[in-house]
Every structure is written in structure tokens, then in C-alpha cells.
Image (tube, rainbow, N blue to C red):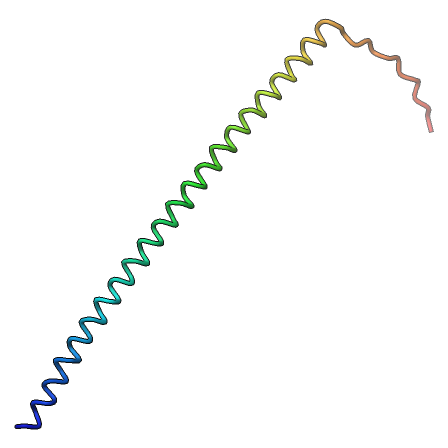
Length: 92
């Protein structure tokens, strides 16, 4: 029976080591998940910010186009462009 005690001690030590290893793995995975979540939130915020910036630029571009249309329309209404006579087409 003396031989079974040392084996019993090893089992307890292995069990404690296994428990510690499991706790370490859980802590590692939790830390990794927190890091991933932080990076995901940062990237998500960056993407939303860039989309908002693009939307603003598109709005500015649209306003500029509308302003140009208005200017062209006003210039065309004030000073109509006379049509130039076309030269007669030559037959081949």
C-alpha cells in the first residue's frame, strides 16, 4: 500500500497543475478577446468616421454642381449664345 501513496500525491499535483494550466488558458483567452474587441471597436469607429467624411464631401460636391448649374443657367438666360451657321456638308 505504500506504493499507492506516491501515486496519489502525483495525481493531486497533476490535478493542481492542470487546474492552474486551465486558469492560465482562461485568462489568456479572456485577454485576447478583450484585445480583439478593443481593436474591432477602434476599426469600426474609424470606418464610420471615414464614411461620414465621404458623405460630407459628396454633399459638398453635389452643392458645387448645383451652383455651377445655376450659374450656367443664369448666364444662358441673360446672354443667349447665337448659333453659328454651319458650313454645308460636302458629299463624298
